[in-house]
Amino acid sequence: MKTLKIIKIGGNIINNGILLNTFLNDFSKLDTPKILVHGGGRAASEISKKMGIAPKMIHGRRITDAETLDIITMVYGGKINKNIVAKLQANHCNSVGFSGADGNTIVAIKRPVKDIDYGFAGDIINVNTEVLEILLQHNITPVFCAITHNKKEQLLNTNADTIASELAVALSKKYKVSLYYCFEKNGVLENINDDNSVIERIDFKIFGNLKDKGIINEGMLPKIQNSLQAVKKGVTSVHIGAPNMPFNSKIKCTTFQQ
Amino acid sequence: MKTLKIIKIGGNIINNGILLNTFLNDFSKLDTPKILVHGGGRAASEISKKMGIAPKMIHGRRITDAETLDIITMVYGGKINKNIVAKLQANHCNSVGFSGADGNTIVAIKRPVKDIDYGFAGDIINVNTEVLEILLQHNITPVFCAITHNKKEQLLNTNADTIASELAVALSKKYKVSLYYCFEKNGVLENINDDNSVIERIDFKIFGNLKDKGIINEGMLPKIQNSLQAVKKGVTSVHIGAPNMPFNSKIKCTTFQQ
Image 1 (cartoon, rainbow over the protein chains, first blue to last red):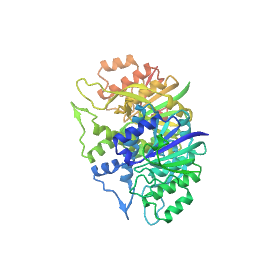
Image 2 (image 1 turned 90 degrees about the horizontal axis):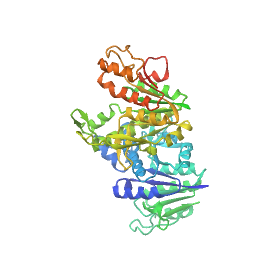
Image 3 (image 1 turned 90 degrees about the vertical axis):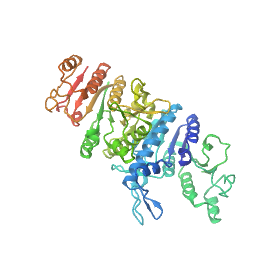
Image 4 (image 1 turned 60 degrees about the horizontal axis):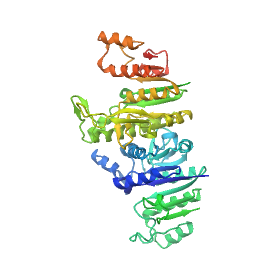
């Protein structure tokens, strides 16, 4: 099987022009098939503010109402996605921007209402890899924003980490997939105040121990659980670390492996 | 050669929910390879207004400054494009949204400054059909918004009619292309107040006569010139008319032919 790298970047890279350019330059040079998944950064909040739309929160959770979904579609699917694609083209990386509606790649359902109605938040139910495989075979790089659809006209807001891991799992049937989560730390840290305390390897057992000891920061839990699940479902390896980590195997990061 | 239909829709369809749904439903049923090109409608002005950004005009011409380009990228490339793709998917038409940056399909240069600096307005210099051909072969429909790029990171605002005709010309090397401009009239009218006075056929000679007689409305000139040039450069036929005209050959419209 061929190798495929799926790399997810978040706000810390998207909000920093120099970091983003460096990242995209390195990304363009990768000579394996690759997919980029990007989060939103702070642009959506800035545009909301300019338009006089306050973020909707219930019990500290962000709610995607129709207005917010429109802004997300404009900012993630339009401004950020198209500008990343234009930058990749300038770096001679032929890419095509995707939401989950494009190519019917990622189908989701509106999150069922239990205690909270999250609005137009989508939980992924199916990933169709056909169009992605066709493009990857022709050396064209898909660039995903964090939007899915329900196949019934409705766009949905979906977590970018989850999009990356669901793509990785679905494509692991055809490729040897390495999934990279780039973020503001060097990896999962044993001591949150010490950037050098990277835990270099995590499996279900180690994760259990770390949780028992209360070492794992709550904010890291979804990323770690996503990573463990991805590996369990066929992804060859998952890496969490700094933005330059996917391009240099010598850089310390946290690795999850089969 | 296979037949390819390229259909351009503008504000009169995009701004009208019922008309848009009917159009997309008919469009989805077309069983030839097809491409959709959409303009912007009034959403961009509405968002600008909400954000407190006034349209920039010089001598009555709209100028694309950086703020306006951002809004166009968000509204045309994000909101309108992704929602059209989601609607097509609901109609079982597998589609992928494109700007000219995606797949490096449409390369433009920033319009040279003579009397007026139009800002980030792009004049098309090259169309790369490779990615489009790959998708069309797999029965996937590209959906274009009116944005191009200069291959040096810069997105550019480009007229949707021109995008449609440049795509038609470039793809006419591989396909028998019919190009359709759907708009608010039934075609080029001999009498602007009589919707039944459709001029059914225009060639360079007839166009000369009509211009001499002062029959052609100034607003129609670019559309007609685009159409004549497209036919001259290899497009099999161009049709100007009502939104339902591409789906029913009995509906009167204005046709330009080789």
